[in-house]
Structures are given as C-alpha cells and as structure tokens.
Length: 270
Image 1 (cartoon, rainbow, N blue to C red):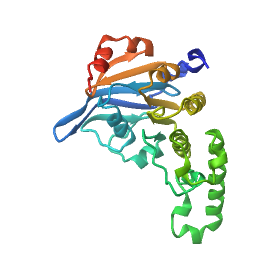
Image 2: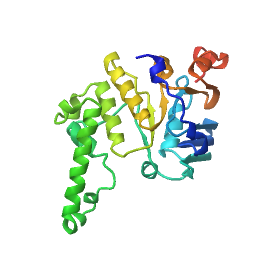
Image 3: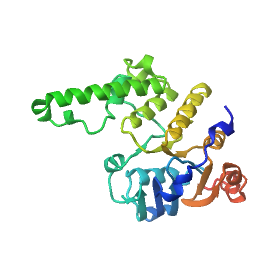
C-alpha cells in the first residue's frame, strides 16, 4: 500500500460547505497557565487532517476542547456550521463528532460485543418506563443495535472475539474496539488520538486500512499522531503545534521540513 493510494484530495464540493469541525481562536487556561493559545484549525467534509507536535504541545487539550470534555477560556468551536462551544460531550456526539483516546479503557469484564452495544445511541430501552410501555419498540431497537455491532466487529476484524471479555484484547485490538464503539454513534467527524501508539506493525496496517475506508465513505478525520510515516500516508494536510500554538500548516512533507517544526521537536518545544 503506497502513499499515493492512501492520500485523498479534499472533495471539490468542500469549498461550498462549512467545515465539518472548526476551531476559531481557541484558548484554554488552567489556573493562569495557558495550554492552548489562539489556536484555529478546520477540517472539511471528507478531509483527513493530521495534528502533530512534541509532547506537551497542547494537542490532547485541543481534542478535549473539540469533543466537549473541556470548555474553552476563549474562542469558538463550530460543527457543520453550528456553534457548540458551550455544549457537553453528549451534545457533540449528537452533532456527529466521535473521539477515541490514546489509551483505550474498555469495560474489561464485559464481552467485546457488549462493549460495542454500550455505544448505541438513542435507545428507548434506556428509559425505565419504555420497557413496559413500548416493549416491541425496545426489542426492535436492540435487534438493530446488535446487528450493527456485529457488522462493525466484522469491519474491525474482531468478530471471532465477540463473546470474549475485553480484557483479553491486545493494545492494538483495544484500539480497533474503541474505533468500532465510536462508529456505533454514526459520527461524521472522528477525532483519533494516537491510534498507532503501542500497536504492533500488523495491526497498525489494519487500523490504517480501516481509517482509509472510513474516509472513503466521507468521514472527516482529525488525527493526532507521532508516527510521521502514518501521518504522511494518510493526511494530505498537517497542522503542527508547539507550546499551545500553531507553528505550521501544509502538506506533510512541507511541515516536516519547516525549521520551526524541526526546532520544536529537537529542542523539546513542549
């Protein structure tokens, strides 16, 4: 699989539509310490963008802001043309934004399949009285969710482990499980936090192939990753951060060759 086959240009119609997700002059402070400072970025419909930078650059804080885990001290967050800066994570999910974590934490004693079912959205069975007043509806929704979960396990190559407890999964398999659980919510934007970290080369290729397949289906993807080979293979555009600020933006090759980016990495600009 070559870089040419993996990289995909942004759709021509993208310019006419608002970005799938956009940060406008975001700042985040913790007790006077500024972790993200006047940071702006946008991911268009069907685009795959890499977010890189040394440890401590503010990348994960950016993800937490975009996903709603943190509220910005200043600036705005827009999803598909809707301003959502003050909305919590569950509202971001409802607007079509899902995120993974650098260290997946599945429900260890639940089965792999049950872990996926936890991610099903808008289930009437979660409401106590619906189980008595509309049992047929609850059963139909549960059947649909079960079929969807099994299809997603097939997609991430974990079908054979469906009934095993999640604790038996390797690090790479846990990343695939978390991706599948995110997909249960049908997001249009996926925030991937270091999907290559701690993954063996064989499973990494599986993850890359699945990310490419999702992008080919029109999913917009923002990717935090230290593996620059993976970023170069997947992303046509990269944003580099250091000390909470944007350093450079452009193609992977141009950003990797940027003197400010090189200095941030070699000089420990975190």
